[in-house]
Length: 343
Ligand code: CP3
Image (cartoon, rainbow, N blue to C red; front, side):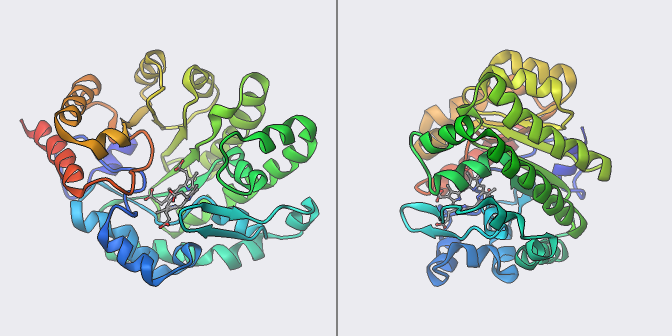
């Protein structure tokens, strides 16, 4: 209930389904592309409070969505740990191989904040410009961040990370522990700076099964969520364990969180378990369908709205919006959701 009330602008009292979407500030927006062509380095945008706050508010100004998501990236964390991160056009992130874990360990809280503090400033600016809308802060979950740290780039087969977990589990646990600490610190600072909700992105949870899923997905997220809840009991936490399928049942039973971001593979029993436990469901329109548009898109939106009804449901996508998505399709989607509520 908390997330839902937070997601709806405090000014409005209507009970319509809240809507926001992953990567809502991004390359499908001409106003984003305009800033992006001037700033060649993606991370420099993330660390520029004036530009990052402007970008965070672009989709709100255009569509009046119900939540703002902080414009940043999950890979600011390896960067703050001393692993150089760059984004190459048409390729994606490139991370320098880690030579020595000690090299990461030597870096303490002060150094983290030296790098991350512009992000806290971005939050402060967003809040000063828009007090009413819910602001969502985020970070990557430890395993997903570790995946990029070890693979060094977006990978197809994820062979390196799987080999790393199997051949050097102790080292992997050491880095995961470090990521747990920095994530708690970073999310706490985001909350202190003004975010209302936090989301954990576990985008690569589909890579692990059984004991590995337990040790590297459930346990680290549980530690972060349990410790954050002790510090900030009123801040809702959403988790996105992408493509975890039926493994999500254990995740739900083991961790006390407020919202689950679902995807195209989320099974029915996971959805009913959320409904039973009053966990907010967020999702799950296929970004490809939003790109294609037309009658298929309308049909699916209507089906989802009917299926989830208004209760404990936030409309979103199953993954980030694709850069080629026509803005007219986004407008149509938002209009349909809003009209559905008032109909
Ligand atoms: O959702 C939002 O609008 C908030 C900002 C946000 C970005 N990335 C901006 C971004 C958030 C929440 C993320 C999360 C993120 N970043 C995840 C988890 C969610 C997911 O997509 O699974 C992951 C895995 C990353 C890592 C990442 N960032 C990759 C692999 C890439 C390259 C691929 C791509 O889509 O370009 C990015 C780049 C990135 N992050 C862009 C944006 C707007 C595009 C950068 C550009 O302008 O070139």
